[in-house]
Image 1 (tube, rainbow, N blue to C red):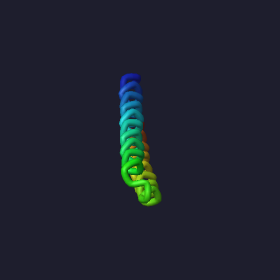
Image 2 (image 1 turned 45 degrees about the horizontal axis):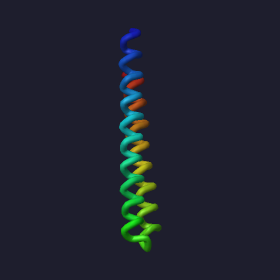
Image 3 (image 1 turned 90 degrees about the vertical axis):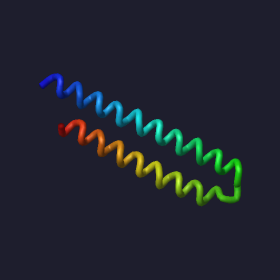
Image 4 (image 1 turned 90 degrees about the horizontal axis):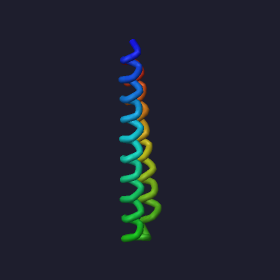
Length: 69
């Protein structure tokens, strides 16, 4: 039983690391896009926030699945 908890913790950690990497890439790409076209700031920001929400939802789903199993 203890090994299942360890595996769930590793799965939750991997999900958190993956979400961090994904959000970092989204943020970096958004900053680069705004630097190239400053007039598109509003649209780029809105799209970046939507994508961050999707990444967070997937990470939360992965953490829940890791602890259910």
